[in-house]
Amino acid sequence: MASSDEINNDKLPDHANVAIFPPLLFGLSLGAGFGLRAIFPSPFLSDRLAWIGGPFIVGVALILAAWAVRTMHAGGASIPTGAPTDVIVQGGPYRFSRNPIYLAMVLSLAGIGVWANSLWFVGLAIVTAALLSWGAISREEAYLQRKFGVQYSVYMESVRRWL
Image (tube, rainbow, N blue to C red; front, side):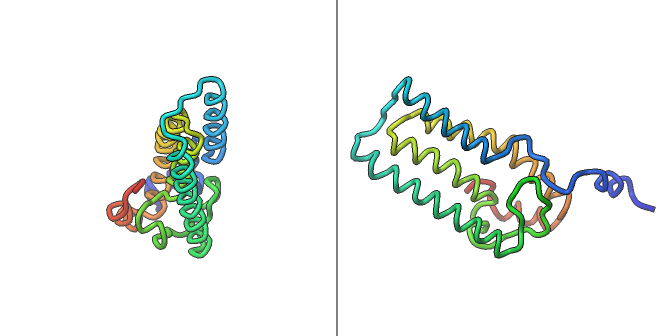
């Protein structure tokens, strides 16, 4: 006879059941940043620093995102939050961060803020990170813990959530 935990797990969906669709959150944050910048400019850097630092940070974010996606595909894992996960990817950028794609999203928002010389984006990057932690990451972690148990616990103990 199955234990109550097994019965309860059988009724749960085989995906993270996130409250926030991360690409949509990123798009909304980006749109809000440009909208707020147009209405209430909030420069905080010299133009030279903005034009050097911004593209650099955005470039790092894009490289990190591409590396993370490539590592996920090579490891046979699914990326969409609504799809089942069959493996825990621990190579590539996942050796340093459990969420390199989300880290890349937040970094790119901050980088766009530097490039556009708008403090709004930096604030939105912080809000986006908090919303991702609450609405996506915590739910993904609960799902992976439920699905992989000790294997995921060991990974969580050895690799930080963000960086």
